[in-house]
Length: 206
Image (cartoon, rainbow, N blue to C red; front, side, top):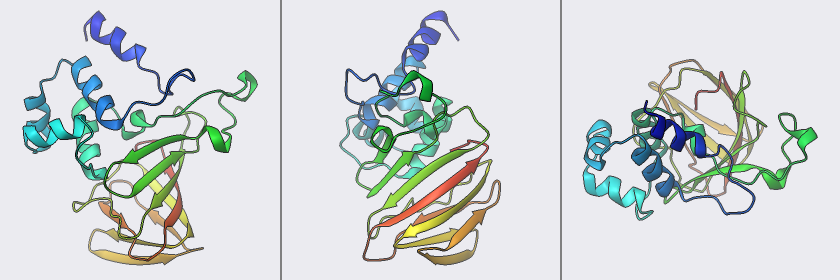
C-alpha cells in the first residue's frame, strides 16, 4: 500500500468527530473505494453488480442489503463494522469501557428497514455486541451470508425469523439463538411490529 493510500485510510476515523455529522453510507463506500484506487467498474465486477447500481449506492439513491454491503466490504478489504458511524464525546476515562446510550455508533441500510447499533466500546476485543432493529417485513437479503465467527443472540421484542442453511426458525421475544462459525444465514422480520434483537459476534467479524 502506498504512503498516500495509507495516509488517507488512517485519516478516516472509526468514529466520526464530534464536530461534524456522520457521513452517509454511500459516501463512505465511495471514499474508501477511491482511497483503494479502485475504479467503479472494478468494484461492480467484484460484487457481481452493474456499474449503475453501485453508482446509485454511492450517491445514496439505492437501497443496499446486508449481503451486498458484506460483498462490498470484502472487495474493499474491511469488515462491515468499519462503516459504523456516530459521535465520540465520551469522557477519556470511559474509552474502551463504556458506551452511553446516546453515543452509540449506528449503521443504517438505506431502503431496507434495518438499523444496527454497535454497543461495544471498541472493535478490538474478543467479541462485539450489536443491537439490530428490523422494521416489519425487513430482510437482511435474498442471499445467505456467513461470518467466520460464532453468533449468539436474544430477541428483545417482536419476531425474528432466521434461516440457517435449510432450516427456518421463528423466534419471539425472550427466545435466544446461536449460529455457528461459517454457517450461511438470513434474518427477517415477518411480524407487524419492529423486531429488536441483541447479537454477540465472536471474534468480531461482522
